[in-house]
Image 1 (cartoon, rainbow, N blue to C red):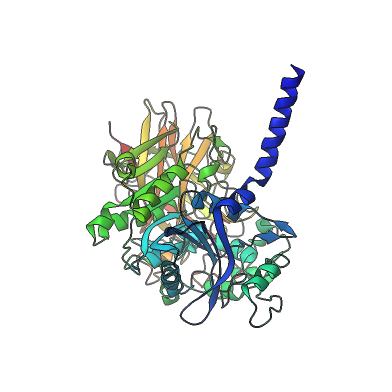
Image 2: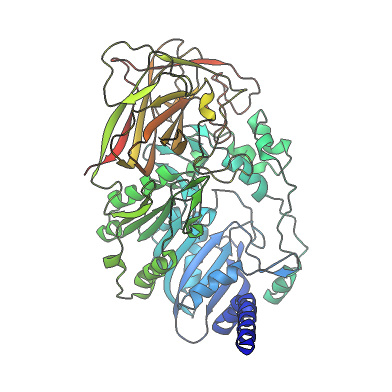
Length: 624
């Protein structure tokens, strides 16, 4: 028995030792590793590139990731393994894995501008990789967030070597698609999303570098990279406090951080021509490659991401491209797909076992398009795989939304006092028949409704994303609360959510916010999605139309999206207000530029719900 026990101990020690060494050593056994290749672009700028490819003479396809983030193999004197882990998974399957920094980032030359990287950099990289003697001429794209944002616009350039793409949590690359003028997650409904305020502080940095000798060789660059990874070490900032600063144009200056990129972007309006001159994808660009798209319910841009997927499936001119678009929607936060567990917690809510065989599906996808394997990806994989919260299960459909999903109109009602959880607001399928008293609340931009959970990322300690019990928030009188009766049977809500509010106000401009809530039998109220509309843009983003005091205006908010099963005994709730801060920047209600203002005006905002002005929300109910 003692001998057996000692054998098990030594075996476990061996496994631990192997686990510590396996990535770097195993990769070295199977891969030719070529780091700090300076890949030339057409204007002479060179981009730092690491290449990991299988040993041997066989030509192989490429999986390519381009990123603004640091992938240097060394940091603080220690060898990092994250890139090696990804490279190993690709190389062992017969792919070259190529990772590259955007121009102006780390060892790459040139000047960096977020969302403004030349599209030609992607095209030139494809041409360079496909011409290498070890390449079979086929390239696939893989990445999440800022490592995905550039994929869509470059996929519209129709490079002959680009075979497939896998964009994940890709909203930062969406400019304009349909009714959404996201401009790379900078806006939602014409209001600034503050995630990039915080993100830019941590990511943008001065381009001071070690004095690398002119004509430095690849060997020199590899040696230098062991000592200098060129990553800044910005002092930590309390973003919950920093984002309160006014005017918002001085946010970065106040921290202080590097502000050149931010200073340009904060002044751009939603339809500024500069948004259309960089690397963003807009819906007049035709994507010409098969796509395997990944999104998450609690990501910052779930609705526009789904709208882009539908846009490609509907508008691609090539029938083969149109028919080869696939989608996965997970119930997690931004880029958190593989962090799902047997008991996945999103915010403070358990959504069950949300795991999926992501890696298997992704490589099967690449095998199909980059190797020409006659595999079973298409026969096994539905066009849309989506996770339904509440019932906590994966479902599938051939379309988004599923064809069984039908919009049903729910109307807002009250006796004029829907303010807070304790008010008399209700939600029903019955259209108002007469002149119901409207609901009025005061919106003070100096005391905005705090963001609590939600569909967000990248704001440091300012907002924690996910589902949180909103009951405490709903005690505020500047939140209107409309709640359905208790459900006598469960309903699944899956699809886009459309909302129309009728507003009058005593200010020239304000915002309207809305949240969709699942109320549990114990009263806990968990947020599903949220959106906002800056009222001056209610007639489109090409012009600003201000309000007249007391006049009633119809305001259509940008659509939301979810898949949630409201169980028997639950209730559906809608919250309406004029702020959700710091998820979104505050409207100071003056009708001015907002970005250069420090003093706000308190708005008296009224939501009408009568036969003449029927404020409503259209919910996507799955038919049995």
